[in-house]
Image (cartoon, rainbow, N blue to C red):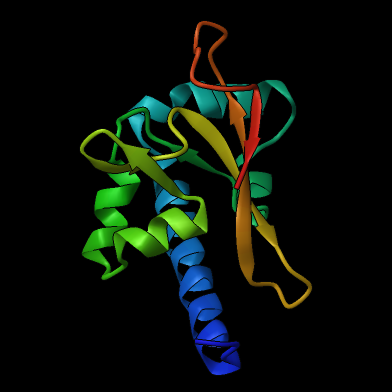
Length: 134
């Protein structure tokens, strides 16, 4: 088929919904014991809890598919997760694109989350560059 604006609008809404659900997941994960390294990183840079909450800073757990499983449970398809940039193809299906990183949501002018910026926290982490965006 050709250009279908209503289909594209529907797909955009689904991707925004996936990013919103991911942001909520990442914010909750920042409170986990594993995310202590992220909270320490923020504190060392003068970024307190109020600032983290205001900017919706979160943490992506180090496991392979924590977010992917969470979003599948919310009804998102593998195709939507890969299109969103939140997951990537792994050997046995989609895996989380971001692992063990601080996460900042990127919003459009309407305030919708359209992506994420991610910052590596461990020097010995060879999982990609220091900064990575969707």
